[in-house]
Image 1 (cartoon, rainbow, N blue to C red):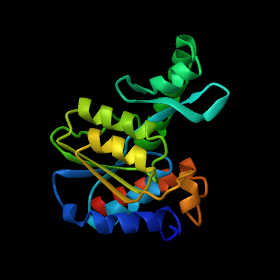
Image 2 (image 1 turned 135 degrees about the vertical axis):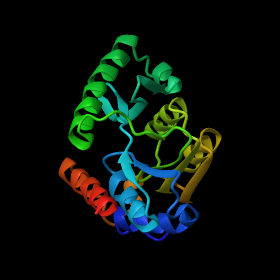
Image 3 (image 1 turned 180 degrees about the vertical axis):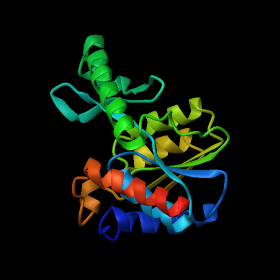
Image 4 (image 1 turned 60 degrees about the vertical axis):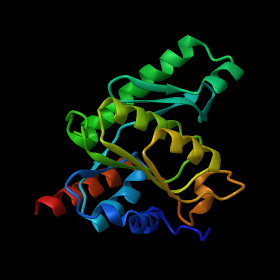
Length: 217
């Protein structure tokens, strides 16, 4: 796979693979913050679709936070990786502590990014849910579970790059998966980007505001 320049480049490439959704009134783009927001912004801009964020938080293994033991989303949705939990003998208390901690962060982000509004309306809608890549897929699985509970009409997962095994798992959960490449071996999302800089809250707010202004202006 040719190296992605940055997340905006990834979004432009993905938009080309999603062109059938251009301008559709029944379709919304939801980004997984923070990394998915610049990718989703370009998809929203090019396809003339509304953009919002789907607030999902990874549950990190205690002491090894980069390793996901699951994820949570709105309405108390949780997806747990039972294999990791069993293998590492993670206690129920540790799981509940992580859920409580990340639930606070979801509420904080909802206040900052979305002015404390209720979750986006997705019932009977086609939802293109976007991230900057798939490793374990924990957050994406929680996102799909949340969208199913909210009665989304069609769930389209859109990512520029991902692990083949994770992509295959998501094929069973989503209605459509658009993944531009599943390189092997796959050691991490960042290795497929020339620029994989950290995304901060200010940039997320800026991109969401630009999208809103473009659609209402």
